[in-house]
Image 1: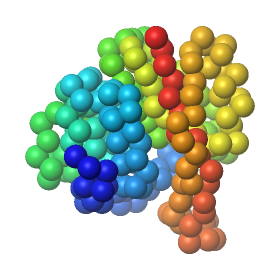
Image 2 (image 1 turned 60 degrees about the horizontal axis):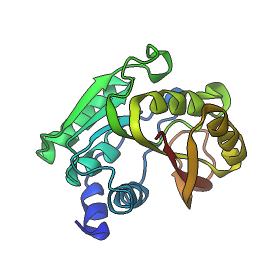
Image 3 (image 1 turned 90 degrees about the vertical axis):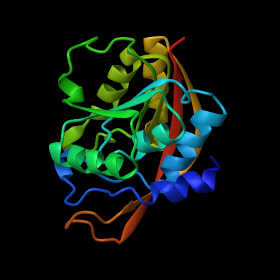
Length: 208
């Protein structure tokens, strides 16, 4: 599947109807999702035939893209039943049989509940702003316990130094695959601008 074709398919994935600020629910754009998945698939061969986890999957754009790239199985994890309902609807519309969902709180998941159960973990975690401080690192820590090969994640570029230090402490290799501009659309009433560009790193953590 070509990149443009993948992006075009992902544009048909329904996003949040009423996003929840406490959960930092912002959609991953079809463009960013397609670029991430295409790179993971073509450069690193970490999707086709693999067992993939999508943490904080929301409405499922990354899971659905991974399924289209022939993941053996992609399992989406999210705390929010409204988001998972949309995810379920999306996967039914695409008639995908290689996706599954699990409702759970990634931050209170029992340590090693899914230890080394997946080949690859993909995620666009909460950036850990304001009331969710440190949540991005909690997601990353959990992801690293779950993957046998690699974790792919989006993080604010401004946190790169901090994440690099943590990766060193944890004994994992971190590489910056790309620097992206994350176009954050105005999703909530308090947003004054129509959209804001945030500098984001697309990172790969290898656990082997």
